[in-house]
Length: 338
Image 1 (cartoon, one colour):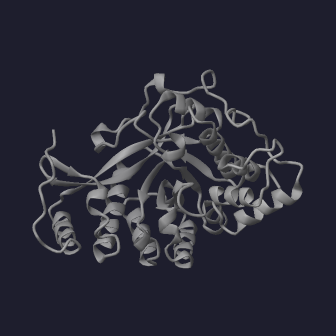
Image 2: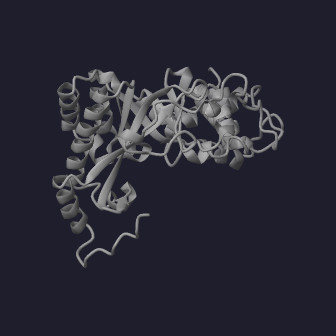
Image 3: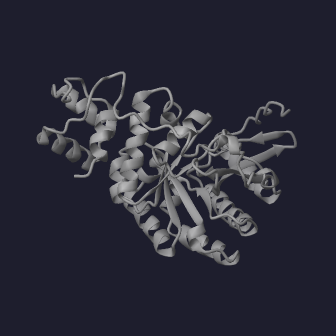
């Protein structure tokens, strides 16, 4: 069992992690663990996500939240990103997997040299660019939007995939689907956790899957921990799932390449999404074109699902069933073809 992390010396918080991480890089204390991305319908492992860890002491393994926040906007972050990309590509060359996903920080996604570094790592390991997927959060995307978009376009030109992580939280996700060259979205665990118990979460996830598929994007659901969640995701056509149900992040020798058949939500067990939230009794507004037009206009401006619902409710607009708007009913409208 790992013991608690020892207290740090009395030095400036921003300086100490930089010095320690540079030393950790030289001492080979940084490692990557990998978590599979699984097709919930077949159990096929599409690829893995690379996750950074710091073996700070023999029995102390630090998670990214323990050390990355202090260096995210420093040159050390660039060094870490370069190392992660090189290590991930080297490991992918040893595996017969379709893809490897790596996380890119906000300060790196606006750095033009990132494209050159990724191209070099792919070439050094004899990998086709399409086997690498870079992941960025909505927060990273909103930092220097124009610069980020250009770097991502250059990566797409190279052939590398781009995933928008934590989709649906914090920012104007719908706007980014329009303005960023993403190839896949990862639905945040905050929504996935309730799909088998909460009708609103189920409706939102179902609508996001339909919306993403309508514009040709792959969908990955994060934080899958129960077979009931996997069955729901299979039922609504989610492409891939990731979470402790299948495997915890692990070092390469312990990463599974096959999934226990008991965890596969095939067509016989897949749970279909409810046609409408049972606890609200509402249905989509389909007979009021002005309301639909307003919803789509707000979405085009970058408003989130919750913001759109709040705006409609503030103006006293109701659904056809005379109920207040929610994020799920807004999502259902947006998922329909125009």
